[in-house]
Length: 203
Figure 1: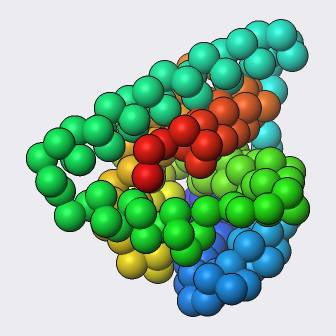
Figure 2: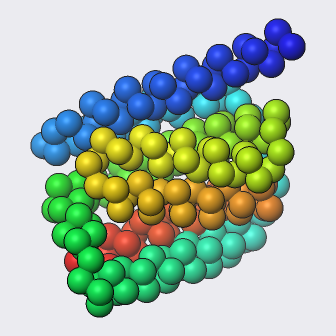
């Protein structure tokens, strides 16, 4: 019981730290990518020290499943965006503002996304938070609760469409991580999704 309470305290500290870091990250778009990169490194370190990352697939397998799953998730989001445009939703303006303020715009920002930001999000939220929930709760609760926590740090971007998108993506990657038990797969999936989102979404 004492060990379980310690684990819960560590999890609480980790999530609160993520909120603290992302709050500062979204405050100023001029330094967003510097702060996002630094925050990712902090969260990676916390997750590695306090958790255990799973990797049970060969490189060929995690690349295949990662790319295919990233393509599928992007396809779903692409169709969702087209639908929002078709019905004239105000969320389209929120998406455009997010791209204008926070999308990577040069080589170093894309490198930061690939090397630090995406791995940081997945190692912390899937490899640490979701895994800790699974250890002490049933699977369905773990998937939903950790997805909501993952989405909760997006509130500082001041765009509810991002929070909703993060819940959907969080559920998808949680299920995938539970199924395949491969962190490299999830990172490849997230990278594929993000790069397609930044390059091909018609914003």
